[in-house]
Length: 311
Image: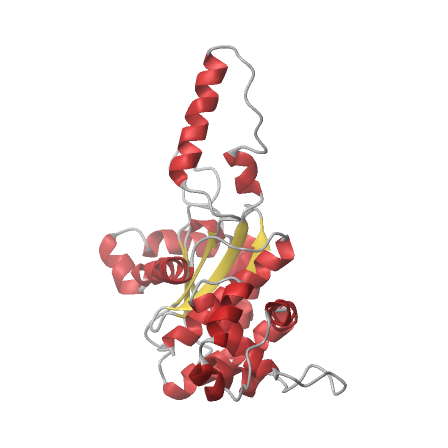
């Protein structure tokens, strides 16, 4: 809670407006939101915990706990894209001062993951699927059901991450909704990470989902970075021809063998999968929001809480 308060104090103004009530400062509310996410509580649950934690409140200068409505409105304001970017900017500055980024030796890894829009066990979904198949096999009408698993997947919250593999800090995040291709995530994630770190000559690694010649050109020609992506995107050629594009063919040669992948640093890409697992195991894989915008805010709060937990 103290780390979250210090981070927000350096990245955000004290109040949202000079005519606001000034009962709580923005850093204090952000610290309360981080505690809520860390303990996996609802807004009402976080209010109850904070009411019983006078020492925590005193650490950030609070005389009383904010109520759940205040926390909900604070989340809508503090977790907007522009303010979340300010907090990530400050995280990168802290990491650069502490010299833990290690981008000169370890690459920046990109990946995306999906969160659950609500709490439903996989066992329940499998049993529902079996029941529907048995009903169709017997020629009877299916029982009423709001949506299938395929319909649910189309609306799943999606989070793209750019992770410094040397320290597991998230340097850039992009929250959206739906499946879709991953290639459009490459530019915002790489550019935000590039502008936040002092060392701007690092290596970017990603899986085949972000592979494209345009993304290689953006990284190598425009930003001066070294990019390595598995050239497996698209339909494979039947005659074994190399992929189209200069840099995609280069990646196919570099990543041809296990030894070459290890030597090039591509095997460090798995650390972004580790961060995905850390976020979901420590902070939960399901979101409490009921709208697309609230779920995006929930994902950004998970990213910021993950960084605060590392510090």
